[in-house]
Image 1 (tube, rainbow, N blue to C red):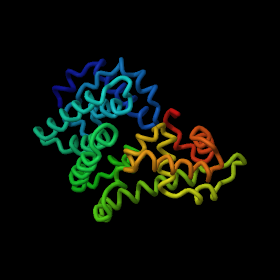
Image 2: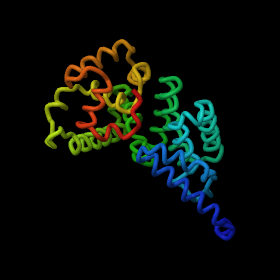
Image 3: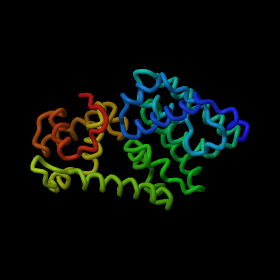
Image 4: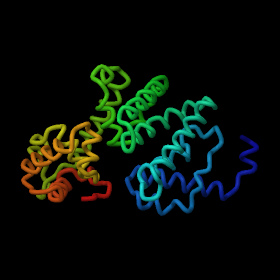
Length: 261
C-alpha cells in the first residue's frame, strides 16, 4: 500500500475521479453524461485495499446500458473474466458485486434461467456479509428479477429482507411523486392498476418494447398487448405514448431513463 501511494500519479487520481463520476451518473440514470466521460476513463483496477468501489464493475454497468457502444458479447466476456479473477484471487467482494450484474446480463441478453442461477449465487455469497445494498443499487430490473424467484426462495429471511426493502423504497417513491395536474395525490390511479400492470407500465416507461417486456416478465407478447390495452382503458388513453405521457404526471420517477416508443 505504501509503495502504491508513493508512486501514485495525478493521472491515476483523475481516472479514479472520472470513473466515480460515471458511477454517479449511472445511478442517476444520466446515460448520456456517463457516455461522454468514457474517453477520460481507463477503468484501471484499484489496488486490493479498494474493496467497495471497483472501477471494472462501473465499466460493466456502463456496458450493460450503452448497447450502442458495447456489444452484449463484449459485456459477457468482461463479466466472465471478472468472475474468473474473483474465484482465483478469492476476492469475495468482487464476486458478490459481479454475479448480480451477470444475472442482469442474462435477463437482458441471455437465458432467463441463467439469470436466476446467477442471482442465487450472488444471494448465497452476500448472505454471509448481510450486504443488501449491492442488490438495491441495481434498481428496477433487479427488483423484477427477485420477484421471479420461487415462493419458497422469496420466503428465505435474507431474500425476504431484500424484497421488503425494494418494495418499501418503491412505495415511498410512488407515495411522494404520484400527483395529477392539480398537484393533488391521485390515489385512485394507483388503486386502479394491478401490481402486474404497474410492472409492465414501468418497463414501457423505461423504453422496452412488447417482446422485451414479455421476456422480462415471462409472458407472451400477445399477453403483454392485452395488458397494455387494459392499462390504456384504466388510464383513459389510446396508445403507449399517451400512457407514458400520463404516467409522467403520475409516476415521474419511472421516466428517469430515456423513452423509446
